Length: 335
Image (cartoon, rainbow, N blue to C red; front, side, top):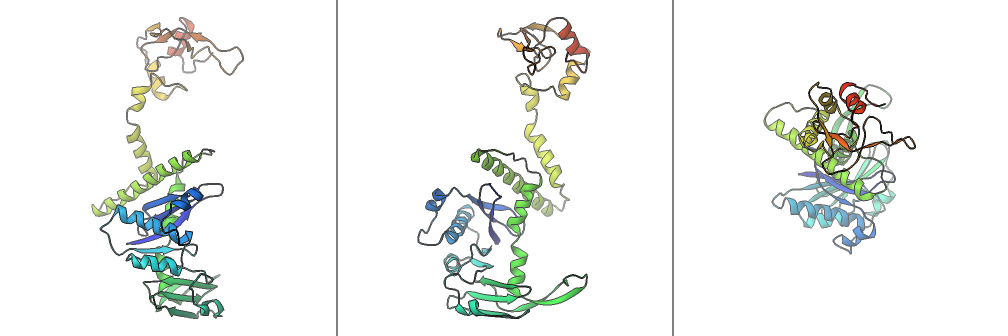
């Protein structure tokens, strides 16, 4: 099971550390960052924060699926370190990731090496950790407890042209490139039809982001189920629309009597159906704005009525006479 670890955050937004499946981009677990509170709650307080956050994500994964074995984490250089590799190896988990050459316990030869394009240098430590640097357009350094220093031929477009060329790439680079994009894909999914709105309430933003993740995970599981049944899945947008309709159900019909605001299409069909409508005093003796003559946006324009239409589901407030007639005969009933 290959699981990339990464962080999702936007400028002025909430930082969220995420562990996602590389094959499907299914978000397995995540940790919102709340500053010192989050730091103090992490496991292994003697380790660097970047290692502790990955270890906690992996620990959460193990609690969710304790029987699964053979995990392989892919991390970027913000997290990758020999310390993290040793800790994960003790838990039976492999690690592959890009690496900063100035990390603690990185061989000094990597800091001083000057490579020409296409050259590489590799070193395996006593802890069976592979350190590899390879130069393409720039130097790329990686750490892995799973890969070897071997290379393989890869086809790609030549820079500035449309010609295909064969390039020898280290296998660890190929493997890392293939499996690292899941967190970015999950972030792209959550941004495609995002319903988040600007708010100063952090808990509200986090709640709706959680809803987005639930929808995305649901769509991913739906796609996997379609593969098993050899069916063609519907589009992401159609899935969201269908999910929305199923969640709403007949809620509008059941609560329209207490709902305020603009009239919907169903209200229009009901009030203009040409059938008998009965006007009665409000059963609780309350006053309601007359939908025809009341104008709250005009100073002194509010008009209250003690009568409602008993037949319409919304039970609109109406004055007896002209207001009642206009509401049930005209499409544009406002005076």
